[in-house]
Image 1 (cartoon, rainbow, N blue to C red):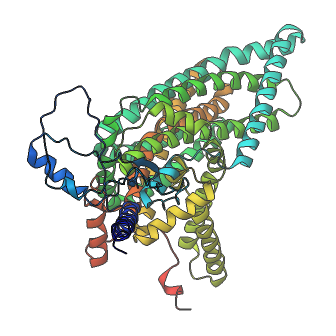
Image 2: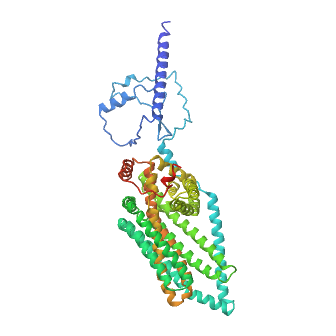
Image 3: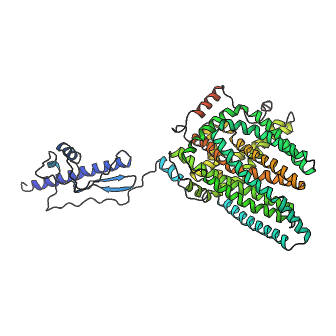
Length: 571
């Protein structure tokens, strides 16, 4: 028994050391997986002369004294990469360490077998920030059916435009003399005005956008009342020509001017807060010098497409059912330019939302490519339904003001408003922020965005925002300027075309300006949506929070959008 005592002692000591090392190893891995241990890697050149004092060397040795040299330490860095610590070398005799003798070295006659290391550790649970980053880098295409329909529509539209241009050229070369004279007259007295209106609208669109970015407070007031005076002036001018067609168009402009003036008076209490939000939301634009590049590309593409489009309108005059074909061409142009506007909207939303969410300055070109590929389907779906939903919503709200004492009219108005409010939750213009940032579909993004507003109790603020109305009225201003210029020009050279050219140039001026005004509207949308997502973000000030506090205290009441009258709510 005496001869076997040292052997038993060594085996017992070895088991204790192995058991202690295993427990410490498991505790260390567990702490790392919980995120409680941070390991920093440091590379040191073996040839470099590094002076390490005895205290530091002693401290390092004491930190590693309980490690088993036969069982390397396993640690996890950056969530998944496994690093094996090297074995602890015995200090040289010339520089002894006080803690070195405590490290046990296995005898050469009994080599110990290292522990088996699992090669497939359990995947760590992603943190909310990692999940958010994954969603921000989504590569999936959204609303593929809408994308397919838009591509199919563009193929058909290009084919129809090409065919009608061919018919127009054929009429100039092979048709009878009467048709040739008619087409030459159209080319001479209609085409120059429309092309001039396109160039004028591009110049006006950039002028409006630049003015809004530089003088936002002044421009909000100016746009509200300029749209009133310009639409009224255009209507009066057209009535002065004393033609049935121009009189009808002029009456429409005057009616719109009256409604515009009433709206400007009604929203006067909202202007101050709108200007404040517009000023704050436009501040990040100066950090991105190329943020207007998508606007340049879309306006250039729009000008080229409208040039061919007007030639197709001329060619439709020599084809069957000209009115129906021209209406189809107008609807196609409206959808196409609205998609162009929302491509700019998505690009700006992506750039600005990443700035708010992650504090990073992303590439405008990459965001533009993403808007033209992954998110194009959502832009197509939103371009088709958002203007329709918002227009019907305005009509439903108007019915709530006009129903009077009639119970039947009240029931109809109330039902229509409820339906439109439900539809608005599933399709609204605020959705473009989450479409651009997280790659969500249009309906899901609309619902999630409105849920964010409800969680932060921001519905009264976003519901009373007039930024979209300001951008809309800016397009109306450009359209009216184009009408005034081209109507006066056409009345001088060929008056029978005045009404037709007035309508065409108004549409062109409005659509081109809306493309340029997508930038400020996208900035305001990002400000509201990103604030609702994270109100404690250091990039946001207390503007919305103070507004909400004043509204809850009853000291600052937002002028409500027309709802169900109070006198009918109890019945």
